[in-house]
Image (cartoon, rainbow, N blue to C red):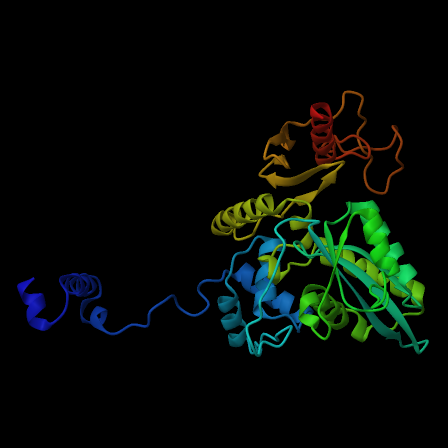
Length: 390
């Protein structure tokens, strides 16, 4: 301690220098850059996955790639690490803002599904027909889940009401619905047809302030996503094809596309009450993949499902050779796929290319029931157990 005070450093620093000298000699006392070497935080498998995603989606930024890697592959890498690696590979990494940020805006969000829906209309041109069409959408404020939509040649109030009632039939009614001042929703004299429908259904209509589009910012942002990722480059053969392809996009948005506004989850995770289960599953998958990468150099293939059965939410995910069903109350049912054997009356599956009949030449290593895999049997057993408890 006396010597450390003489040279003007702490005793801890002095002992650190001593250890470095003992390990590396005089070279150990040279200044070193802090942190790990460039690229050392990413395995070769993760680097390949990052490049594949960037090559397939050149407009994706580092945040989007990080969310997709975690969701789909079980890889954990910070956006900054991904951005630095892409720079090393010659890519220009620039996060394009989805909306301007000149001032900090007040952000509101309901605390659970079906407390508030946002609704709005979006118009675009069918390029081949040179015809304008109109898309109405209803979005759950808490989850960003698109609960209803419709594409029509006109923007009539009747079509908006039809879409609203269809969404309620599918997912239940919200406490409130937030609209703009468009004639489909609002009138300055008396009550609009939409307001009367809300009154009849017991839903409170909230009308946004005029000339204040930020109030409907969540669904406005969805229109921007839809435009950039589908509509701007698509040439539909007609309105029917546009409906089908927009429907596919909305399904992917609801169930597959990680959303940065909800911590990298997909809207269905929040809407169906599976947020905590998904976060636990993703973290468990990341931890398991870290071990798989360390031991074998390849990650385990993911398996995860979430949804609703009747009035109950549930999720299914794999843990090793087991499938785990988690219910809304947190209880778990497990099936060990390795222990699920074929039915007693099962017949072996014929070899590929052979007729599917009992006399066909068979491979003794294939002992699966026709049309059913161990996973099918496991899921059937889980479904039976769930039904018995109900």
